[in-house]
Amino acid sequence: MRSIFYLLDAAPYGSEKAFGLLNAAIVSLAKGGVTVGLYGDGAYLALAGQNSKPLGMPNLADLIYAYLDIKVVAHEPSLFERGLMGEALIELV
Amino acid sequence: MKTLTIVLTDGPYISEYADIAYKIARAALKHYQVNIFLYLDGVHVPKSGQKPAMFANIGELFEDLARDGATIRACIRCAAARGYRAKEDQSCQDYSEVIKITSIYELAEMLSLSDKVITLSR
Image 1 (cartoon, each protein chain N blue to C red):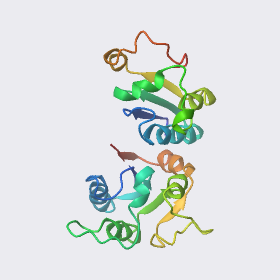
Image 2 (image 1 turned 90 degrees about the vertical axis):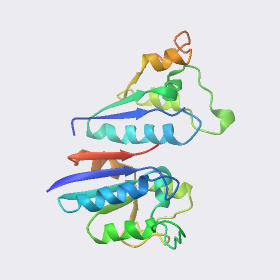
Image 3 (image 1 turned 180 degrees about the vertical axis):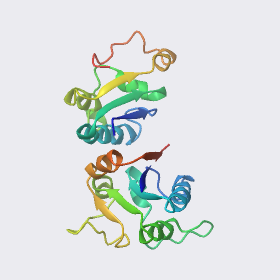
C-alpha cells in the first residue's frame, strides 16, 4: 500500500462517520501516506474553533491537530456552496 | 492469490450494502483471499439469531462466508459501543465462532495487504 485516501462527505458531528473515518485514518498512518478529503457536508470539519463539548462528542479538530502526518484537503466548491469560504479554517487544511 | 478487502459500515437490512458485500465476497472467493472488516454499524451484521421475515438472513450469509474461507473481523470499539463483548480469544457470544472482534489496527493491516479495497458506506 503506497497511500490511502479517506473521503468524508458527512457533517462532523451528525453521526459517528467522521469520528470513525479519522480513527481509520490514524491507524493507517503506520502503513503509508494518508490523506483525508473533505467533500460536501464533510467540509464543515475544516472549520476552526470547534467546540463539541455540549454534544458529548470528541473534538474532531483536535484529532487533526494531534496527527500532523494526516494530510487534510477540503473541496473548495463544497466550502463555497456552504458559505464557508470567508470563515476561519483549521490552518492545517 | 490476490487479496480483496471489503469495508462495511451499514448494519443489515437498513440498506442493500450488507447484501451487496455478501454477493461481491461470494463471487470473489473463487479467485481472491477475501477480508471483510465490519466497522461502525457494520458490527450488527453477524449477530446470531436474526429472523428477517422478508429478506435473506444476512447473519447466516456472513457466517457461511467465514466458513468458506473469508476472514471476517469486527471493530472492537464499535462492537463494545453496541453491546458486543469480545472474549479473550476474540470471539463473541453474539457471533458465530468463525467471526472475531479485533482492533481497528487489523483494518490497517488488511488494507496494506490488499490488492483491491471496496468500501460500502453511506
